Amino acid sequence: MIQMKNVYKKYPNGIVALNGLTVGIEQGEFVYVVGPSGAGKSTFIKMMYREERPTSGQMLINGVDLATLKNKKVPLLRRQIGVVFQDFKLLPRLNVYENVAFALEVIEETPEKIRKRVMEVLELVGLKHKARMFPTELSGGEQQRVSIARSIVNKPKVVIADEPTGNLDPETSWDIMDLFEQINATGTTILMATHNREVVNNRRHRVIAIEGGLIVRDVAGGDYGYEG
Image 1: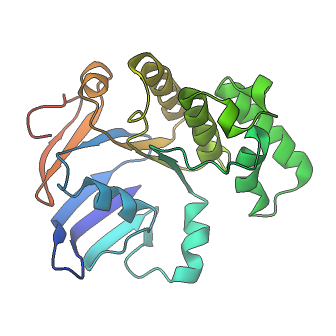
Image 2: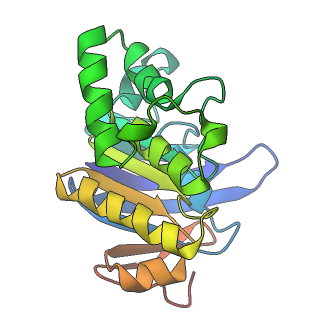
């Protein structure tokens, strides 16, 4: 599903964020990406949805090389990828239903299919009854649920989550993890960057630890460890 071969990323200021990463992630895997601040995690994650482009090396998602992908084709790529952010990134003037529907409207899906699919995912995340509420009327956990609903409404092959529990209290974090587990159980690949040691240690999945732009540990069913 995801392949990186000898990927380097050097920013204009001279900082080398990734220093020759080679890794493969299979369809249906659940992978945590851990590491200290400045280790290269954010760059690694942003590469996945082409927010950043590698300086050199090959990066494939579902057979598409992101290093050479033309900018005009990036929106097509992102239809296969759901992204969940720490700060939710909901549109404040749209209600819950509209925030989720927006992802389908931009690809010109029919109104009937939009309504059916949006209500399906809102039921999955437990927010069907709050479809007409606005983000400011929701708790942080509820806003993150909307963000997750939006990320999966297109039925993506991979969901990339960047610190999805970072702004949530511990109890809400476990609820959000339950959702990710459900999504993963349908065959969707989950790639989650996190500093949440307790989550990683209790919900065991593959752990990729990045330090100094390099993968220093890659363990199936691993714990958070000391490297992160």
